[in-house]
Length: 361
Image (cartoon, rainbow, N blue to C red; front, side):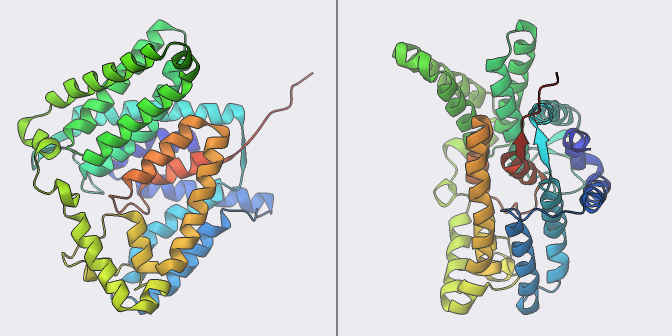
């Protein structure tokens, strides 16, 4: 079920399959937990505490429909809680990672077939999120991380060539989207993971490391030069670069509102309230700021507890997954993506429990 969900999820960009896929996924996961008759109490419980507290903040929110605002978040994190109730074998984990490589291929196919340019940026014609280019870049982080891992692990030249093509095309479309944070995070994943995996060779021959970094920067610059001039302007001379696309002004307005309401800083201003105080009628464009503003320090502590435990678990079992979660954490610092599917996937892969299968006699 999870593999099918991972591979097909990008289709939500064009045909809105997320309502069907996640409803079925939630139902199947829930039935499996009921059949097992056991609930595991661990860091995943913080997800339920976060949702429960967010539900309470709906009662003092200025948002006209706070419970509706919370619905998608609740569905996604209940689903995450349920699928994390189970442990997965090392073989299952490998299959899931391969599924993300295929997910990347599906994303590329969608880019080629449904891609378009709006406001001088590359989009996917979407039925859900409006195909925001920054969200699109988030979808590529985990597939690129898995491609980087398999690229170094596989010996078959043909498979390596295919993986390299997928990586180059992923960079190309993220660059075309004009997402500054997205391109930075994708580059971070590839460069840091490759450097870590080749650290022994680099210690023996430091020149190889220097040449590799220079080569990577050169190839990245070539990719950037292929960007249309109007899109390239976002990377080189956009007037809003210093304010992170106007985000810092929104964050300033929200923090001023919180400091004016000390109780709100602790308890939150209410689910879905951020647009009413941002000064631009917009969300915070920062997942952690959204949670802090709407659910207060209390809600943010619940969320950060799970996030940090997931990060530690990721680095302990899979360096590529840990690096991918760090990159995602940086990206969502510039995006309001509390319930975005790419974030749910990386949190699942980072926190899921892995067990070794017993050898059969």
